[in-house]
Image 1 (cartoon, rainbow, N blue to C red):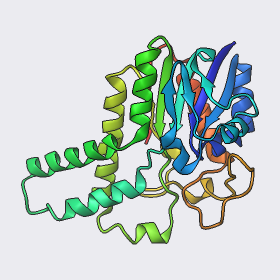
Image 2 (image 1 turned 30 degrees about the horizontal axis):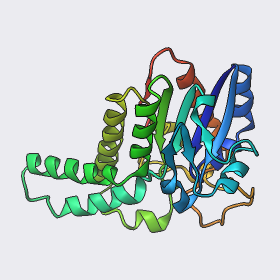
Image 3 (image 1 turned 180 degrees about the horizontal axis):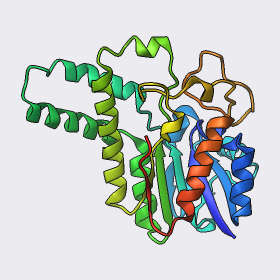
Length: 256
């Protein structure tokens, strides 16, 4: 039986709610362990001597069902970084707002400016450095990465968007940057399934966000939480991830 660790932040809750996903992975011969740290704790996870060191091992142990405070990488065949504090929605909205000020300039200049802003955004993401440390120390393992899901559709977010077409272009460019980074390192990349997106493909459909649950305490998120997803979303992602895990090559899910 292969051993898979799905590590990440609070977004793990959606996957952990997926009973169908858990059964499918088990039936396929995979032992899945969740591990990570929520919120601002995730960026504080470090790699040292074959282990991922949690800034809050007691909380990470809860997430892993009592199995791991710190994570021994030698115990796993596949490391899947899910979310990893790589949110796209707010960053894309900010970048799109900046890009509107460059509208009078040439297309080449705007493209260069967009690529530069996305590179700077990615440079500040802790998941990249963490994955690089794991790959450098354990190149024999399989790695898969997916960013945080897009924010669920809500009026407050949509009110910030003056140019939906531009925002979609920015999101596509951000996904492509992540995918290219992964491709050059042999990391599988999973892009959010298009069937979970709301009309316009700028946000997640709200049906996938209602009744989401906190990973550690099992409590419901507030109704106004549009960031975390629910078990129905987890069902979709787990089915896609199982397909990706079982593919002979590091396939890319280009569905978003």
